[in-house]
Image (cartoon, rainbow, N blue to C red; front, side, top):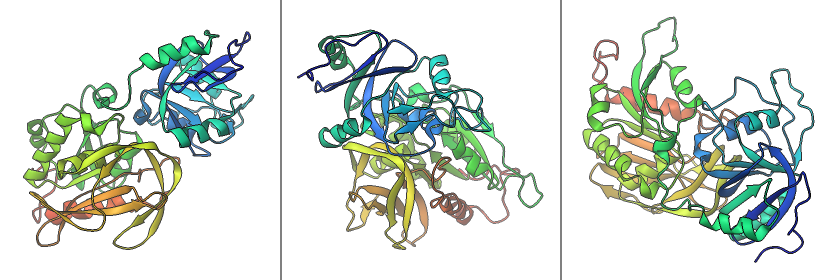
Length: 400
């Protein structure tokens, strides 16, 4: 049912309608027109530029819970990809004038330039509480439609996130290489990693490169033969949008990688696909985890980390016991302390060696905490334990 009192939007106003009929009136923010997607809320108080350019937000309309957005403007350094990926943006108070020494233009100017429809002066607290109670749902924003019932009809025609296979839409078209940084005065890479781009963020290969890893970023539809030809020391699956239950080809690719014994590290979408490859299911969370202040516990060390999240799906795996798989013993390694959701998995060989692991959160966390940055070092340790003594990627290309 459409919320009463919003049937006419005055000139210069914008309209937001959720798929259950709840509607809000505000002001246009960004490009003019209409947009549709899944309404989700992000709790970060900073880092909106990284959020908006994160490919994991493809086809989602992001509601900012922080009340004041845009005060640091927009710069040319903090993008996590080559464009803004969100389908729309919802804020309460948009900054009139940006104030930051790195700012090149305002947030609204960038939204307009990239054609992103948004809405401001919305009661985002009420909207967020509604989404927490009813769950993430489809939404439409329009600066042209004045009738909530008419916009609702179009919202209900928009595709659901369940069953959506979106990684190929955000993945790189051609492979590229991120060179390793110099370590102890040497420019020779310590390891070679193939990163399968399911919606990778710029900071992720950078975090590996600064540790001396040469990163080959490849498209989401890459085959095992193409990856093996690069003779990697390890394989990485990135974050990304969509339903992990629809990414069958990527799951089968990961199965081949595990069968070959190549060290594996995955984050976010890569954690969900790892879960599927190990035989676990996935499911859609009510409203997901999106923000930079999520508490997670490492079940082995009992250490609590404050972490950055962006996921609407999760792995359905037993927390209280290990699971035998064709590739080794799988266990839940991390859980979220707010709701006990699985936030990490690990796979060990019969002799106890770690051979693959993943986490549901973001250890690169460009705009968030760095509690989990050690996971990149864990990946290095795992690759070093597997490598033949005396080999290096410059002379042997690692082992595949």
